[in-house]
Length: 100
View 1 (spheres, rainbow, N blue to C red):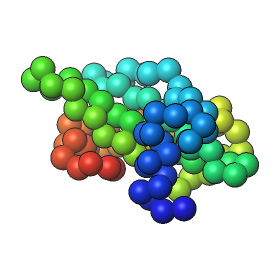
View 2: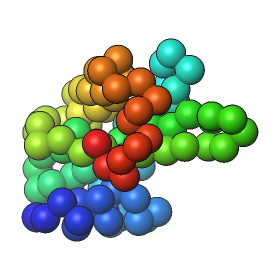
View 3: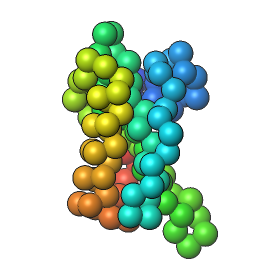
View 4: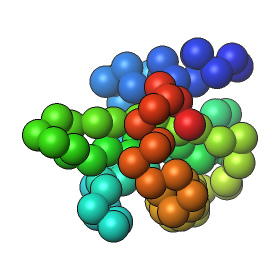
């Protein structure tokens, strides 16, 4: 499955297209993380979004990783951890790209 197709599934707005509904939002260092693992066969891929309001404008970026998990709970936990790592490494610079 190509990256475009995966992002399409992740952010199509349909729970059926990408699998389970996103997890509740988590706040981290002023950013909002929404873990949204993708169902891929019997596995779940690490994925989600990072957002933050900057100068009155909501900025958001999506991420997906090749990591696979056998259950949704593990995928949510790992997606949140991966988003925290991205925030720690890139800070607000994360919004300079469409996908990270």
